[in-house]
Length: 257
Ligand SMILES: NC(=O)c1ccc[n+]([C@@H]2O[C@H](COP(=O)([O-])OP(=O)(O)OC[C@H]3O[C@@H](n4cnc5c(N)ncnc54)[C@H](O)[C@@H]3O)[C@@H](O)[C@H]2O)c1
Image 1: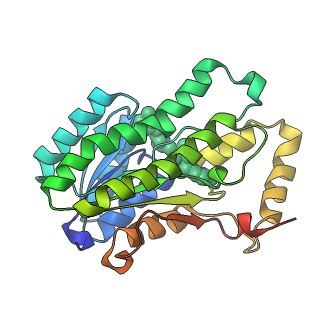
Image 2 (image 1 turned 90 degrees about the vertical axis):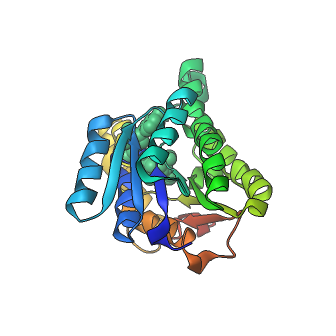
Image 3 (image 1 turned 135 degrees about the horizontal axis):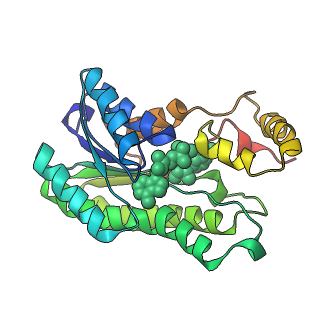
């Protein structure tokens, strides 16, 4: 299925990586549902797509709420006829040592970063089967592979997303639904800035320089770097890529020391 035949739901598309993914699909002629819990931000992304000549609708929904997710997919189908493509991008990061993780914080990370993808996949897949096939790309993280001492919930959720991807690929490959995940490294977005801001002020610049020193390409990632991979995975050029975790980290995890 070509990109201009796809109806794409992008979660968490008010800003950052999700916004870049929504704009990238629209540039290829896809119809886009711009989801976010931040309704105003979602409207802004959708308006930008429409002003560029594309087709997009913003739907405010919390992906941690199964009822809201089901309603979003019903509305998406009412608007564009069907849904072919789901990009599970919305995420929430929480960096604290284990003993400072409250049960509420643990549950919040898991309910958005892992269960949110489950709710969206459950709501989307019947529509994809009805459309004769589809695509799912889950946004994981290099934290699924290597992590920090301050990210037990986030790392667990992202490792769960990789395993979830494998399971969906096995179950729904026979239904012509290709399922993959992308693990970004350090991408310049508000989420990365929030991580740096969570550090004591005197450590922020040194942490940024330290992060940069781990990147053999000499720069951090940009949202467009991830959007390009996601669009490729949903294109006919990636027909035999299925059940894969594609790392896009500028070489961050290649280093031994
Ligand atoms: N930025 C990075 O360095 C980086 C690295 C690896 C992975 N990731 C992953 O990429 C994805 C996007 O990251 P980002 O940096 O663009 O984040 P971001 O915080 O800039 O944007 C995330 C978006 O998700 C939305 N969102 C949060 N909870 C939601 C919910 N319950 N329902 C709907 N929308 C919700 C937010 O409102 C926000 O617009 C996330 O899954 C993140 O874990 C980011």
